[in-house]
Length: 362
Ligand code: PEP
Ligand code: MN
Image 1 (spheres, helix red, strand yellow):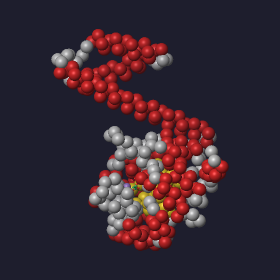
Image 2: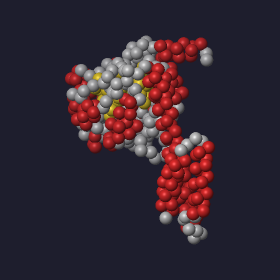
Image 3: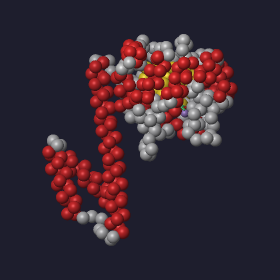
């Protein structure tokens, strides 16, 4: 590793913590996008009344996947955020993607900036933002890149640290996948945990809204994040979520946010030593990874089953061939035993898989 990188790396490992580690989550809330002055202010007054909300968010420049969708109000929304701060006392944050955005935010007293998932992937843009922040003491939150790559995420954080930004935190917002999943963006918890392991003093916040993609799942993801020891949450909140111009399905009302925060629970990890706690987190991440693999393999198995089902139908072959099923089961049970697994347990699992496979072919 070149000397300069070594300095950045050890600096990041030893940086002063600025994000409070508390018995209650530290919450950033506000709409996905600022739409109108009225919508911004009404939402801000709503979230200011929620417990634990420490910062107000609203996107002004919106990076959208497809063209001809709402791309944000841009600089016109800056005075609205100033009004939020004046009227509610909440500090404000918005997404920046260019040096110009940074300059405008600094000129308008925005208190905190975040770098979006589509920007973190681009080292030129991150470097440009980092240069614009040289000599400025403002907290910067870095969302993970849209693809599941820890290196890129760390790289963006290093670029900012290298430019002198010292109040840094990472936002875990999940990773996009091509296949359909329960989530809009897969959490891949092992990645933020690995980031925290590499830089234990770096603040870590979870954005359950973009992971969930639908409001019914936001609380479950938020609780998982707290269980993983993540200290903060960024939750998209809108006065009238169904009318939102972006991310309507995942936004909650301030009332829903308030109730959700009341139910979330930070488990008491005090009696555990930090080392034991981080071992538990690491092991859980490994378990989750294996579970994800099992599910993927099951899905693949079912795809093959459907294909063989089609072939059998075409050639008028009966779905169930008992001799094949018997040898398969014997074989699996023997292999399970050799691998030190309980044969009855494995038999139960394969009987369930087989029943499902037969149903799929009928
Ligand atoms: C957002 O926070 O509204 C946003 C665009 O997030 P991300 O960069 O995580 O997609
Ligand atoms: Mn959004």
